[in-house]
Length: 325
Image (cartoon, rainbow, N blue to C red; front, side):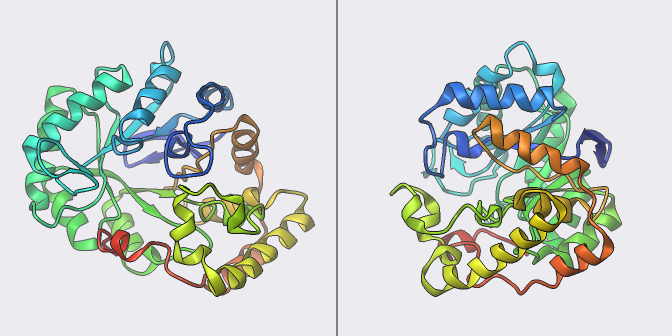
């Protein structure tokens, strides 16, 4: 495994997103033992960036990651997120990045993760009711106290990134970025590079679509959030299968899997990018991390870049309102 720097924090070039172990996807929370084995296997393969959030579950994913990392904490850059639970206020799935709420959130995350510090602490979504300067200032205080090592933002737009960075240097911005979700390239990515901020793409495999294994939404559990996602619905789904088929065709040519090809394309976009493909299975983490060794030719990269845009939005209307692009 090769390593890069997100600003001044060294991480493996491919990380591990832990959300699906406990939340959101089919089978979440049904086999914690396999999820723990997956974390351990990732560490054996050189993965050092592990990503979770207090809202996943809520809370259960941080607890799971904490158990998995017991006795291994010093091997990882541990990232978690705050701001989508209003503690003592409106509750879960309500943006709240007021300083007092962050204080409550960080203590809970530290306890559940079984650690005395969080390496990378992200604002999960921009809170329209709290100036970003106040949020950045609150995280700066946590950094000064040693409870947090670095500050991150998730799905923030250029103006928010600049304003936050002026108060407390931003180490990384987490955003959805993949072969079929490229909206950050025009406005956000140039700002990150100007300010020397790293990029951590989530859903780098298109929520599983780019692996070629998703052929029908009938595969999903009733509570799988993809059932209501525009890209996985109706005519959009049928059109998007053609994109997955193209990735699969190139993968067959190079002797790799579609997931490895999709990740290799993403890694080729810069040495300041560390995607966090999520999985709860040992076999998948082995497959994903092997993408680090796959180098695509300029022609192959161009062929992938020329794929048509995905049909349908990547978020529901309610989710989209919380994004800044």
